[in-house]
Length: 355
Image (cartoon, rainbow, N blue to C red; front, side, top):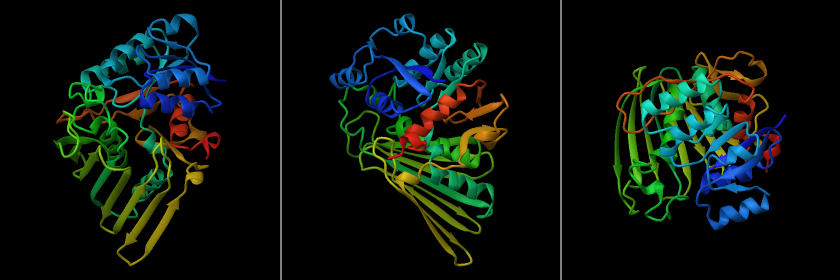
């Protein structure tokens, strides 16, 4: 059974969503929403035979919609989520859910009250290389983890007009934090547990964005571990994480982006002198037995075994907060499968999306 979805926000990422989900057997796009669609969005809608609504409310009056995918500016997420939750419509919201923790709490509460799902776009957890990292951490082969650092850059947002919302500190603060850094914080929390405090700084090195173009953050986890992340807006695509344990270290270089896919490479070096290298090619990104990033009681669950309604998705770190709440999003319906489909298609993990 297909889930009928509307996509709101037809900027760069909204267009990626349309192209990726067009091949889905579980998700059917029924309409699009954008008050000011550009020429490329209009052309894409015509090619896909989709109607663009310029008024948010009108999109729900003409057709039955099971869920909405929000690719809108961060500041719109709360109001739009609450509005559609009250209509009984499920929500898949791009990250971050909000820049304000109290708004996120309202979104979660409203979705729970209306018994609809609130999903968030952290598709990186579906990458086969990241799944392998999670396995290494869980089996304790590295022993006690001593330190970890992650770096992420791409130049996909390096040529934005200076009046674009992504360059406005009010809507997308801290350089690449809301676009790239939020992926790294989510992954660090997934791998190493909740964060207790954050120290962060930004810099302006090449671009004229008021938000800056480099952000670095030190994350102090409740376990006592310290991790470091860096996001850079200007340079070509690059993503790497290195984890040092008492028994050895592991490094993952992930060359893939949903917009520009590529292979990933992992290297593991142990104190006994052993070295293991593993490549994850584009056509191998789908794993038959992958663990999905929806977690129950802190542990990843296999799709085939999930029958409980107690499915939890961790909330990403919100920049500018010194203390991070361990809020959780409760997912309680069959729409979970559509959320998984969206995530997997964006990371080339489903058979229908193989290249």
